[in-house]
Amino acid sequence: MKRRRISKMKKLSKKTLNKSFLTWFYGHLTCFSQEHMQTFGYLCAMLPVVEELYDTKEEQKEAMQTYTAFFNTEPQIGTLVVGITAGLEEAKANGEPVDGETINGIRAGLMGPLAGIGDSLIVGTLIPILLGIGLGLSGNGSPMGAIFYIIVWNFLMFFGMKFAYSKGYEMGGKAVELLVGEQAQAIRDSIILVGTVVIGSVAASWINITTALPLPGGQTLQQALDGVHPKLLSALTVVFCWWLMTKKKMSPSLVMLLLVGVAFVGVLVGFFNPGLSY
Image (cartoon, rainbow, N blue to C red; front, side, top):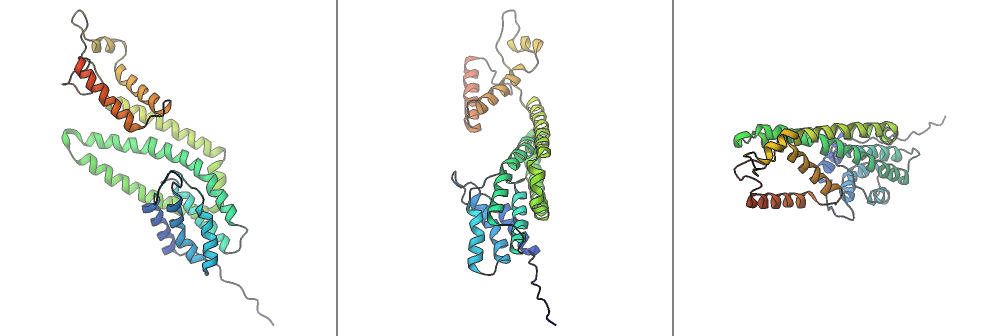
């Protein structure tokens, strides 16, 4: 009686998965350029996965060709893509109906939606919240705000990205429907709404622009504005900065330089009082 030979299923080791994740965590901006963005960081993160799954150099070279295509997403939430493709690469190595074109299509399809979710959740919501808390702790020159931000940000990012990588690896291709379907759009809309509220709260709490310009009768322009709309100048400044960056496509650095110039001229002409905080 002949015994049927069953080939051993290939399974990525925990050591390889950790190495892949850490490579992405520390090096997702490796050789960053406008032409390639995160392509080489992604490629380096997949290298230990491919080396463990494929035995010959020819197979490894063929597999790595998949990850030479352009890639760019929000790096924290985008860790999901790296985990997902690690799972798909494992399935491919075990003979399942997955090829390089399929993997490339999935990662290309996910990087845009995840960038939208990540920018809204991380840049638009989490970072302003942490900075707001840090600013509150930094009163009177205390270093606690900076210490708080450094520790909490790195803690959340490391373990959050680790969780995203692990979940992506477990889900594999099943994550596509969740992240690009109608449910994903609802998630992005909800996060954008929360982020907008947070930005508005931070602006109302920390931006305080006032004027010292006197009016006839002994009243100042600031007192007149407060009678109509408290913090009107602060609100107009926020809207002006938004308009410059979204409609005129000015960079944040250029907008800040412009504000410094306006403040300097305003003090010279007496519109702002140099003794006030604005």
